[in-house]
Amino acid sequence: MTRAPNLDANDKLVKRGLLVSWGGYRGTVQRVRTGRCLVRFSSHGSYVYPVTASGPLAVDGKWLPCTSVQVVSP
Image (tube, rainbow, N blue to C red; front, side):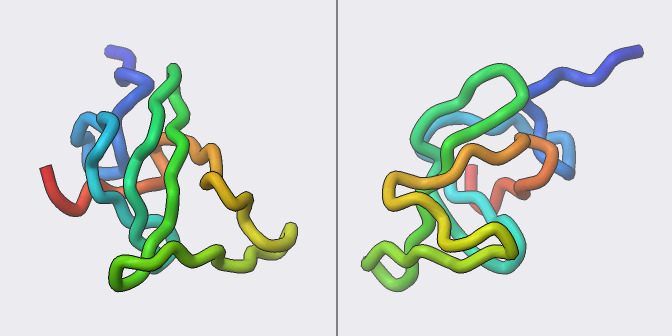
């Protein structure tokens, strides 16, 4: 049996507008495409841009594989 591409690490469906967690950062899903989602990170109402090994994340968010995030609230 194959796994649906838009499921998170806990097999919950990733949809636009949901709050997700990725590497300790929380963000809102802006868009979802097959197997990946655009996440805009926020902290206490203001947007933050966490720095990763490849540099700071983009201003509008970062495309992440859906399986690498976890849905925090439905």
